[in-house]
Amino acid sequence: MRLSNLASAFKKCRQEQRPALLTYTVSGDPSKKKSFEILKAISSHADICEIGVGHNCNTGDGKQIQNSTYRAIKNGIKIKDTFTIVKKFKKTKNAKPCILMGYYNSVVQYGENRFIKKCKEVGVDGLIVVDLPWPENKNFSKKCKKNSINFVQLISPTTSKYRMKRIINDSHDMIYYISMLSTTGGKLKVSPKDILKNYNRIKQINKSKNLVIGFGITLKTISSLKKADGLVVGSALCKKISESIKKRQNPVTKLDNMVKSLRTKLS
Image 1 (cartoon, one colour):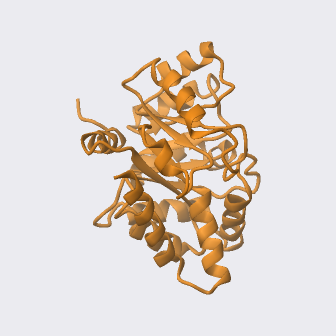
Image 2 (image 1 turned 30 degrees about the vertical axis):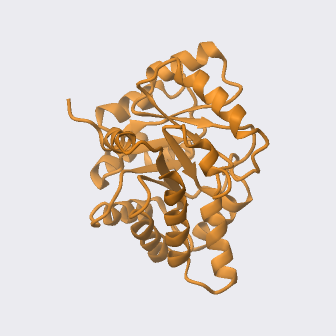
């Protein structure tokens, strides 16, 4: 059986004895053109690119991602523009597997079946729907699988063992572990040691599933979490875009350099 693009990316990183580096940027930030250029630049260093679908009710996001989302919505980004960016990105030389991350309302507005079909058509490899938890997501998850799209399940520190086992059992090629109870971009309130302790407990349930850690990961903290299958950096990148706009610098160059530094710390 042929491995999915996501599973292949994790396999390659395991062979290189390092975690996968997953980046998160918002589609349309700081502009439609620049967000594509950012993806193109950072994919030389990232293993998997998460692309945020702008939504005006992004409850799980902290200040940095909210700022990025606000700029994207102000720029008039629509879901069809995001699909265009993904399609264009997937045709580039260093294109990596990409995951769309957003809220269920965007899916419903577009039409669930139409949305999944369009994802497949443009080359989306995975979907994270933040406010569609297990078991409510079972039907949607099955539809994704039928279309060769990975539906990424979420697990948090408060997920019960009963739910955890069933979520892992129903998961596809990747599971996202929210490392702490906070919005994205919050400072690590839990020590890396405790995060890894929880992580290893989850990993024991099914060692074959790729488990990534998100929330609070920066240039300062990334090295201490290298034992994970993958690490997601999002708020730190969104913050860098905000800073580059303020300082009238090129966000493409700034993010390219930052992701290169993150990748170096994982070697």
